[in-house]
Length: 189
Image 1 (cartoon, rainbow, N blue to C red):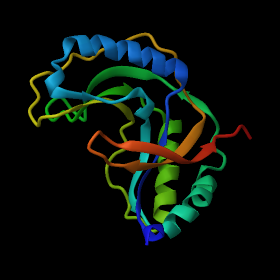
Image 2 (tube, rainbow, N blue to C red; image 1 turned 180 degrees about the vertical axis):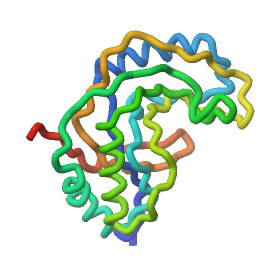
Image 3 (tube, rainbow, N blue to C red; image 1 turned 60 degrees about the vertical axis):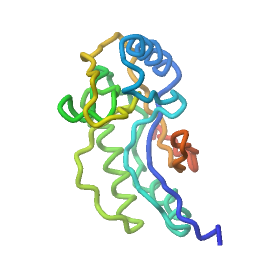
Image 4 (cartoon, rainbow, N blue to C red; image 1 turned 120 degrees about the vertical axis):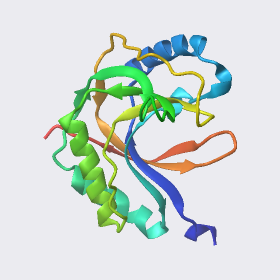
């Protein structure tokens, strides 16, 4: 009966290689300052900006999602977003992760809205949380962390956004394993 299994899924975009390399350098500085017992660092190959977490999808939803998402993404072209800083997320009073944060982007917000429309089209409950784009770099292992970094900024290339990816997420004792299920390029019309 494994073919009826639900798959934990999310829609995201990933940083390009140049941006990833710059972020690896910046997070290395943080690793030198941070008490390692408070933080679990995320492998750069797992870095992404979640556009919409979908949760567990059944096989039918998984089959129709790529076509539905492709429709809602129609007309969206490649663009770039601007890095703002590395800081606690969602806030310094209730930090869950250390994350790369980005300047507001109407294009990225439009991708999140397109992802939300696709989620609703496959009968998922509407997402009511505000979209706050970030790349999680490290997770706090405690509720009240001892270490809170100052916001770190660095000169960075803009982050080029040219595709949207549907990922599966398998939770394991060593951390989540993300697998791209479908890649949907943003095309210049």
